[in-house]
Image (cartoon, rainbow, N blue to C red; front, side, top):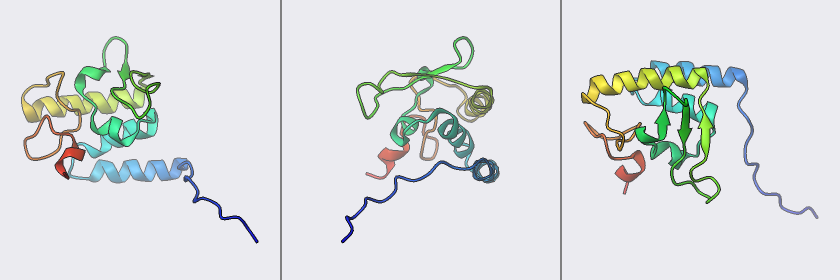
Length: 128
């Protein structure tokens, strides 16, 4: 008799898989998917941390870092993640689009808003 084994937690994406995902994301109509994917692949944010990310948590100029808000664990809350050049380019481009789209960019607004014309509603809250 064999013991039941839990399902595998997954595996890391290969470089080719990452490249294909980024290429596909860049072609999508949504302007949020590509920069969100770049952040996800380079910074290791959890899904909720990414959805609830606000502009005030990101420093694109001086420190070039992101500070995580409320995380799954107490140790994860407030952790600082340095931003590499790939993430900086994607976020600066996203910030420029965001300002063109919403005419401003307030620190308390979500980086990846959901809903037509929305600046404040994180994606998760739309489904409740």
